Image 1 (cartoon, rainbow, N blue to C red):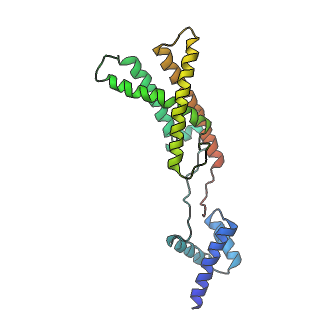
Image 2: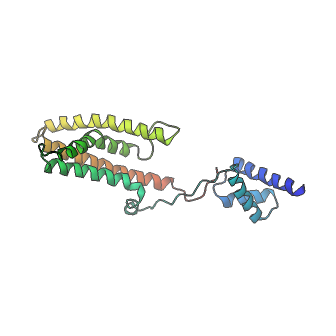
Image 3: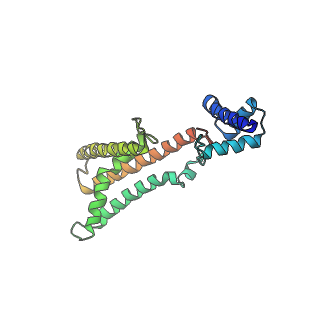
Length: 214
């Protein structure tokens, strides 16, 4: 009976410490519990693991720290979107200049990439540069956040492409295929590069390499 009372008291103390003290690591949690109860550290750790397995507490997994160097960050999976964006934009420009309009069925590749190139990439890169980690509207789930980013990207692309065409109209090159493709390619690469730099800076500042206790 005594052991059960001690166990229940330890359980309640751990939960109470998490709610009140908000420890950021398991080590901090153990230290705060030891200040309240004269119990060995090993027993506290075993109780924490048991409470986690029972679903009474949740230990957030520690994320790998973000490298402070941009070059190293570009080699991680976090920068995959950047490489995909620039690769698709570059591939689209190459396809447009190499595949003629009457070359079937290869011209369908040109149509598909061209649609993505015009309706998606410029706006996506621009929105990513403005909001590198989170869209401006607070949303409860990552799915809604992705939908919001898609909608903003499409809308911004529909706004940027006409503006680029309008500006080209006042240049010696005019509104022709080559200037339009090169201008959109430049915009996409510039915005994507600015976005990956801002994203790296934001994640470096927000990165806290420790195990959080929820």
